[in-house]
Amino acid sequence: MKKIISVYWPFAIVVPLAVAASLHIRGDAASRASQAPLAAGQLTAELARAVSYGMVDSGPTLPAKPRRAVTAMPVAEAS
Image (cartoon, rainbow, N blue to C red; front, side, top):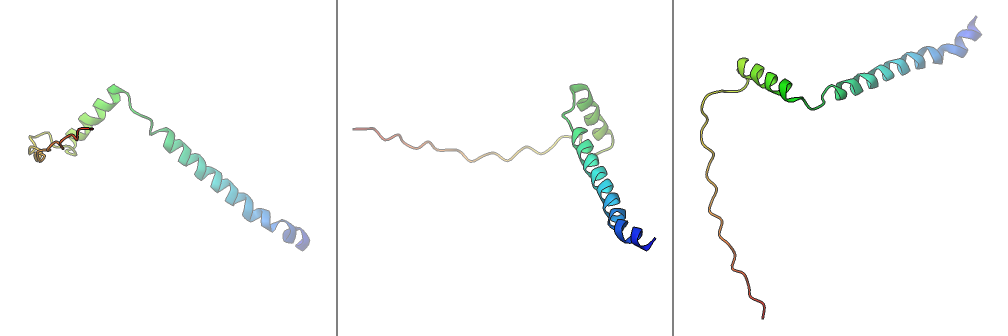
């Protein structure tokens, strides 16, 4: 009996670790697959839900800061 235990104890450790690793990999792949781009109907529903939960402010926002005027560089003429 001791010989059987001493021979197969690595399998008692390796097999559960392999199963846990495969489940972890499958879970990661499933979560990546569920993050596909949303259709237009789903996107508007998610936006409406976010607004209703108060995650997005539906009130007026401050105007963006104006950019500085860009000056054009003079074009050098080829001689």
